[in-house]
Length: 230
Image 1 (tube, rainbow, N blue to C red):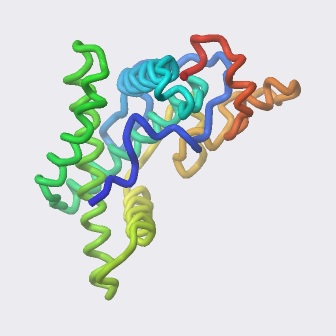
Image 2 (image 1 turned 120 degrees about the vertical axis):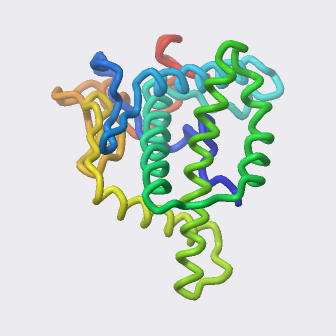
């Protein structure tokens, strides 16, 4: 099984939050049923990701392949990752979904080199968060393959399985109450970054770039250091 999302590394293509100056309220980024996704976990993964991009940007061997992103853009990606992970976890628990332990160990073994780049004090927490995300992905991915097999699709390609995963998640979303902190700009379907969290209308070119899902790299490069990763 190939994890269909590389956690804490996949930032390209995610929607970004507007730089509206909104502050997060409390430590609840989202609620999924009776469980919560914490803002502290979102911010933790955002910091780890930004540190990784910043280090890569300073490495001559990697700098050419690093695409800078705004901190807000990275935060949106981490929020979506953790929200989907909680949905996967609850979906797996509700249906008692199994997974291949050896595959999870293999995936985490490959990811360990990334974990080791994090500060020593952060490594256990980083490893635990990423492992929980991968475990949920693996459980739902395995169920998606089984569902396709029941439909007569014995050798599905990765796109077919990914679509089946999305269908399982969408079906489960209808059975549980999901609310996202408004600061993350979620739409009615709970997709973070798909709606504008600001009440103002963008007028300047800077404001329009801030709310674009694909901001111009030149605009990103001009952001202050504390609002840019890479």
